[in-house]
Length: 181
Ligand code: PRP
Ligand code: MN
Ligand code: MG
Image 1: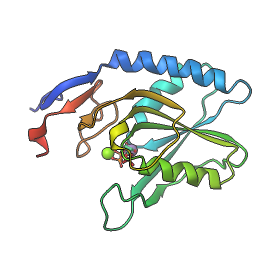
Image 2: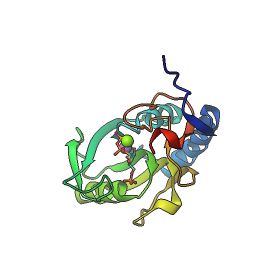
Image 3: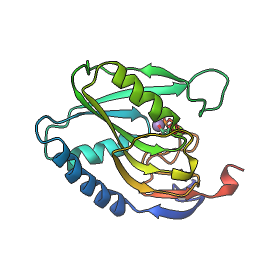
Image 4: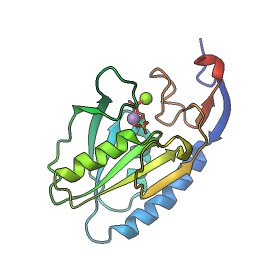
């Protein structure tokens, strides 16, 4: 059978690097919310791993909620128009919200989501992302917590997929170009 590690050209960040960086971010987040912990909002499905690890790093009560979103209409996934497939369970009016994401690529998903949650009357909306591709950004997104800035490569693992596979890879790795070209 095909091995999970096949078709990868390089490991970009190991499991250990990801966990160590998340521990650093968790200390910053704890210091930034001294009174009331924020509601952690994960964006399905990519954010599952970072949510699980970040939430366990935090030394306060980390309530979790989830959204699933997808791009609308005929455009590509980066059209910037987003449809909610699964909405939050919680009413976030008056609450501090921390969006938890695996990656910011064009930034279109997060720019839309941040504004959407602000319109609901959240007290504050901040973003924590494990990865960001600064050179792929198409819109400005104010991101409070970034694990690692990475080059514009097709990366998989730690929640990130290629055609729904590789999410369960423990490291973040670069997918070999022959797989998708
Ligand atoms: C990926 C990733 C982010 C988003 C980033 O999700 O997990 O949520 O794209 O892209 P952007 O910055 O260009 O908007 P995807 O839509 O692939 O869904 P998934 O999390 O279920 O894989
Ligand atoms: Mn996603
Ligand atoms: Mg995806």
